Length: 100
Image (cartoon, rainbow, N blue to C red; front, side, top):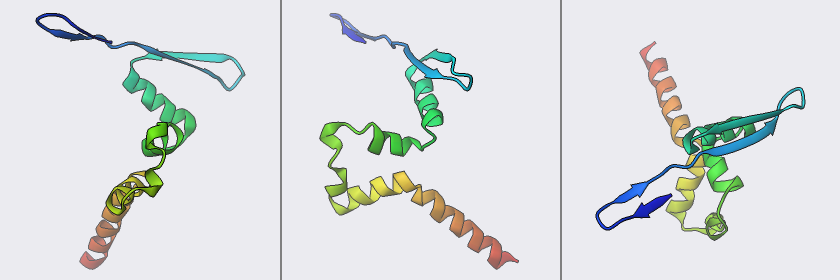
């Protein structure tokens, strides 16, 4: 929560709580800062951060991204499918093959 005074602006970070069901059916409660909760959501859903942001928890105003312009659409797909990591891995494999 941000508050503005005459001379300064202060920012206070709130804690979030996630309650999920454990293996035995008992509730597990996780209380932490937002960044750690984001990591927990990625682990719980078993998908990448890009899929969480662009597909599952996409804001209604941004839900038409599949209809956007070419470069923006390519960037979204690159994020979702981790295409840049894939291309770097292919380059590394080719480099190792040529060295042998």
